[in-house]
Image (cartoon, rainbow, N blue to C red; front, side):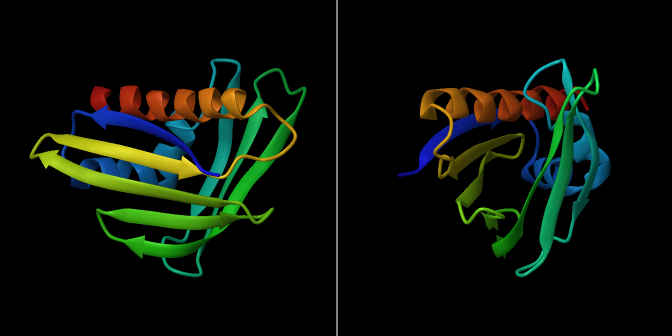
Length: 136
C-alpha cells in the first residue's frame, strides 16, 4: 500500500527540481516541524546513487538518518528510491504551466506508526518545501 501526498508549487519546474535536490536547499526545507531541522544532506542524483539526510531535534534529544538508493531518475519528471529498510518512495514533478509545478509523492508506510500520522508528517515536510520554494 502506498500513501500519497501532493503540493502545488508556484515556481518553474527547473527551480523546483533544483530546490528539491541540491543539499544546500534540502537542509533548509526538510523538516516537519519547527523543533526539528536537517543538519546535513548529501544527494548523488543518479540511478544507484544515494540520498541521505540527518534529521535532529533542535534540543539535541534525538536524531536519525534518512536515506535511500535511487531506482529511477528522470530529470524534471520523476525520482524513485528505496529506503534503507526496503520501503519504496516515488516523486513525480508535473509542469502545469511555466510558473506552476505539481509534486505528487507516494511512499510505503513503515509498520511502527499509524499511517495517518506518517501521511501528516510527510505532508508537513512537503508543505514546508512549498513554502521554502515559493519564498525564493
